[in-house]
Length: 421
Image (cartoon, rainbow, N blue to C red; front, side, top):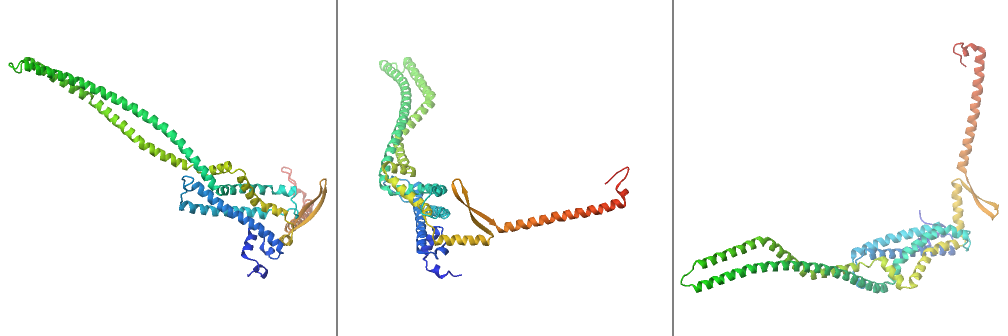
C-alpha cells in the first residue's frame, strides 16, 4: 500500500528525526509546521547524542585496547582501529536506542510550558539515567578535546615513572652484582690458597733438586752415589705427595673454577641484562597510558574546561527530557490522544475522567471500564444465578417424590435391626 500524498511531502531525513524522537510520522504529517519542527528538533538532539556516543565509545575502546607507546609518539594499529570502529557503532546505537526510549516515554505533564515539581519528580528516574549516560559519553570526548595537553603531561609522567623503575632496577642489580663479586672473591681466595699449597710442594721439590745437583757436583768422582739416590727418593716422594694432593683436590678445585667462571659470566652479562631491564621499564612506563589516567590529568590541568564540557554534554543528554515536559499540547498530541481513545474503544476499554475533592484540592482520576470483562462478568453472574435456581427446583421436586414414597410404604425406609432413612 503506497503512502498517502501528505506523507510523500515529508523528506526521509525529517522522518528519521521523528523516529529518533519516538514520534508517529502518520499524525505529524497531518500536523502544522510547529509540531513538525518540535519533534524534528528533539530527534536531532537524540541523533547527535548517538553520534557523539559512537565517537566517544570508539575513542575510549582505542585508548584502552590500542597500542601503547610514548604519549607524544603515537603508533597505529589497523586491528585496534577496526575493533574500535565496530565497538563505537554498537555503543552509539545502544545510546541512541536508550535516549529514544527515554524521550518517547517522557510525557508532557500538564500540557503547559511549566515544569512543576510533580512533573520533575516523575521524570527523576529518566533524568538519573540520562545523567549517567552523559557522564559516560563526555569523559572520552573530554580527553580527546584536551589530547595535546594531556599527551604532553602524560609524557612527563611516563618519563618520571620510567626513572623510578630504573632506580629500583639499579638497586636490585647492584645487590645482585655485590653478591656475585662476593662469591667471586671467595672462590678466588680458595683457588689462591690451593695455588699456595701447590707452590709449597714445588718449592720443596726445587730445594731437593738443587741440593741433589750440588751434592753431585761436589762428588763427581763418585757419580750417582747413595746420598744422591736418597735425595732422588725424597724428590719422588714429594712429587707423589703433590700428585696425591692434586688428585684429592681436583674435584673441589674444578667446582671452584666453574663457580668462578659462572660468576665472571654473570658479572659480564650484568650490563646487557641491565639494558634489557631498562627497555622493559620503558615499555611498562608506556603502559601508563590508560583512560583513567588521562581523565585524571584532564581534571588536573584543565581547570574549569572539563566541567564545562561535561555540562554541555549533560545538557545535550538531558535536554530532550525537559523539552518534552515544557511542550504545550498541540494538534499532534490531540490527534494521538484521540487515536489512542479510539483504539481503547475498539478494544472494549472506556476511560472517564473523574473529579474528586480532597484536602489538597481537586484530584483528577481516570476510571477505566473494560466492556469485555463487564460483559463476561454479567454473563457469568446470570449463569450462576440460573444454576442456583435450577438446583433449588430439582431439590424441591426430589423432596416431593420422596415424601410420596414414604407415605406409600414407610416400612421400606425402616428396619428394626438396621434402621435407615
